[in-house]
Image 1 (cartoon, rainbow, N blue to C red):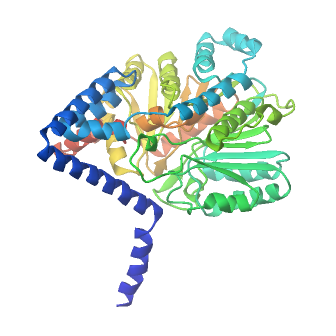
Image 2 (cartoon, rainbow, N blue to C red; image 1 turned 90 degrees about the vertical axis):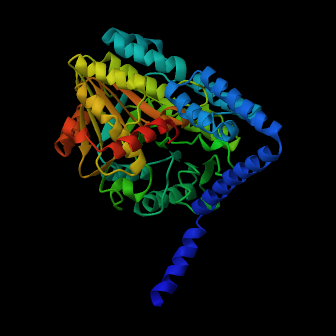
Image 3 (tube, rainbow, N blue to C red; image 1 turned 30 degrees about the horizontal axis):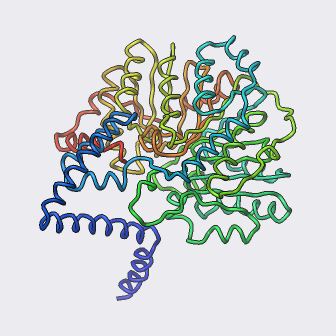
Length: 514
């Protein structure tokens, strides 16, 4: 009897969690719309015809869009299967529509980037003399993302969140002017509590301390009204796209970036969020392997402008960005460093293009770590062609997944890749959350961009492209150590029963919507 009484408070608490209430609200809305359509189309044949016309128009619109064909198919198929409901649901949930006001605000983000991040032509010319291929990659990022390439920047690579966390705390304690944090997930626990304690101290000392987090990413982590809690400590806080339980296309675009910027001199990014599983203080899916990089020097200014531009978009403020420009750093560093951002509302898949360019320009090897392997035909062909040409192409994915259905789609890609000579490994100790490409021992990119459609086409993301920086040798060392802890997938491993194969095929069809 006592167990029953214990169960009720737990059930009550679960049912009234914000994420559950929001989920119930959205499901209820979908059911309501479906019932309304079913009811009215039964008594009014013109409504039925109108809905069919709407679905046909939606299909034509999707086909005409300049976007990835796989993403188009993922919407067209359900619309054709359910023509009465499909078009209406695409209007509510599909695409990246912005109001005029929102588009005007988003244009200010682009304007800020290009105004405050001019390219030093001497640095680009120096890069071109060292490598035409690297210069082409850099020019692409300058042109489409407005992000310049830098020298005079040191980069430290951390193969685990456990290793970077104490360094983050150390650098935060050194802050003298400002601290900017932007993360998809912030969760209470050892990691966030340690950081928050320093933020409170620095805010009390008069520093400009700002925190921006994605509301959907934190919906299961932070309580409602957490912004007020931070404000009470003197910390300025913005919430990216507060999650309203209304069926809308705005649900698609999330802030998946991870940035920690200190005085414009030191910047952190990578796969880690600010929650205990990222430093293995909490075990969720076995050992959590993630990575981070720390920049010191000129290139941190790009990260600072990225943060402030999106902060102004979310807060509606109008900061003078130039006043945050730090004095000339003393750091030297080797190689070239180029932080970049990816905006899902400009119809330019920057992150995916960087990955594809790196694969296609490789001449010796391509090494990849990714939590998800949900790739389209073009990237699959690039990887297969590289392997067929004799390049050493290796991919590490998790063995213990965080989402079973996403992992099923990841494994659905193995057979074709393995047949073409790509070496696919699964990290047997647990879950890989790192997003890193390393090519030819000279190029690398580390950041927040997963190999899935949401990350490549729907989320705000960021990364750092590097050429001949000292840390690239550390990245390769991490790969070699991880290969030894991982299991190489064989063609025999790819064989499965007909039911699992059918499930994977079905999930793969809808993968762009996951």
